[in-house]
Length: 369
Image 1 (cartoon, one colour):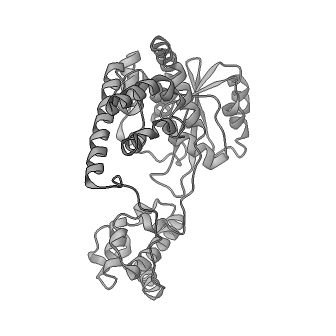
Image 2 (tube, rainbow, N blue to C red):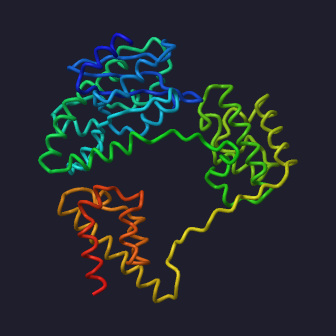
Image 3 (cartoon, rainbow, N blue to C red):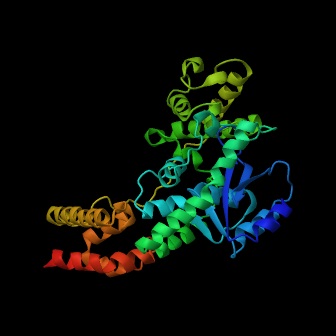
């Protein structure tokens, strides 16, 4: 790997992808890193390499553009496992969106832009990348994900240059490169279970005990929590802790034997624990304050602002969501004078202000007239 990195550091661009095992193992980890340049693909095995720091040097090198496709998950995973930073980053999915493509999957883009077909079979996408040795079929599948990325990046960059949108994509990619992995809040993770909002204090205490039990089982068995037993099963038991566990859908092997006894112990722990009071969160302003006339006026303004965004997007042949954040338009709809404040909101990109700020100001002035 160190020798590969030395060569890669001499390249202007390298393609990067990774494969993890979150569908099969727990906790999840990166199991393969693919590097591509000069029409060649290289596979790095993190399971076999103790010191991955040379890869971090490549990813952080300002002299080599790192090409990813839909990099959000990759950026978070590289941060989670090794605290690696990526600079600079070029995301072909983001670039394609700014070029007006609507089908943003890698396979679809390679077919449309380069007339290249790559395998995207479900069984390959769902493979357990922990298993060694990696089959020839999976090696080829992994290599294909980076073998053509450099050509795709050049193709999209030329198109962005023609459209005058290179700077827009650069800013989006810089934002993406700064994304960090955020661990789940273990203390309150059970409150995120679907269906938990309908549970009372006692039922939430049982759900918490079941969630903690499932987490321990997932780690011990090296299986994702959803493969231990389902969220729906936990909620059903929390609502009726004296139920016949074998009749609970999605409970799997915990319906019988030793695992059933362990699950019953977890239920008993929750039944004897203190009641849980769901933490209060600030209420979201789902509607503007004021009288019914004000609210109706704001709803009308929001509809018109979204129509403005739609028309701008259609004129430029890009997704209207790229033109301006919906949350920002909603805030403006309740207070049109807030438009200037929105120009400095962190959620609004500099390129959006530059490209569409004047148009938005003019549109709001027309609404006031």
